[in-house]
Length: 129
Image (cartoon, rainbow, N blue to C red; front, side):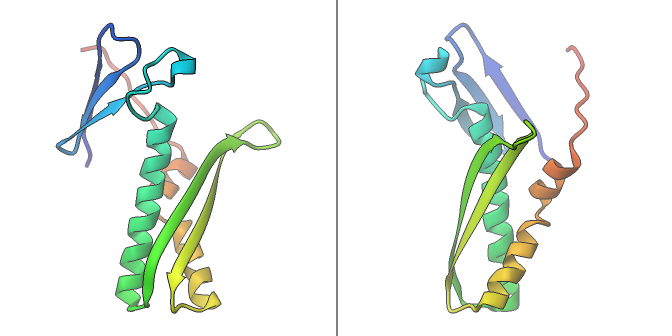
């Protein structure tokens, strides 16, 4: 499926990432002791969810031949009233689409691969190399 690596040296929290043949940099904010040289880990989590949502909705609109001109996904990671982590996701869909089509796209957003993975939880097995 997908593979990636993350490597950190002694340079505070700046981390080099390679995933899918792309080089990325992660870091923490200055207030958290980093250099703000890249997104923080939770930012990458939101980026993955946002990208998956936008791409899936674009594919769906194209398949249905709906005249969607853009899909914007706003994400906010926060805590629910019970203390659990919560992602608030807001969709803005532009184009000559009606309320029913937009509602259907909101339903599809709840079924994107990354959405389903996060909602189901994810098993992580850690070993020493």
